[in-house]
Amino acid sequence: QVQLVESGGGLVQAGGSLRLSCAASGRTFYAMGWFRQAGKEREFVANISRGGGRTDYADSVKGRFTISRDNAKNTVYLQMNTLKPEDTAVYYCAADLSYQGSTPGLYRYWGQGTQVTVSS
Image (cartoon, rainbow, N blue to C red):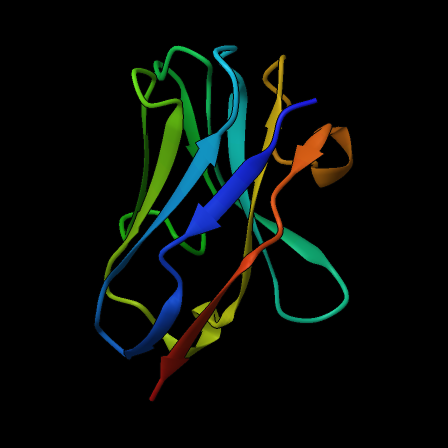
């Protein structure tokens, strides 16, 4: 059982930046994803393969968000720039042994979430 701990959320003005972190317990490297939820549906944001060589982004965040990882720290980051009020949501980190793409139901492990609020 892996534990995921997110940090870095907060309140920021539109146009500002935040960096989210997700630290995974243990030494196993997982494919990681970031999702967000502002309403009923959990929405895909970005993901990264175990080695970091493959990344994918939702169209709504392309060019503004960057996902990266530091396997020495078993941590994944989400750098969020040019934030918009519509980016306001609870952001969740997810992990799985296999690359699972953009479908939240395919990820086995989830963090507790961190709130990101963007004011206009």
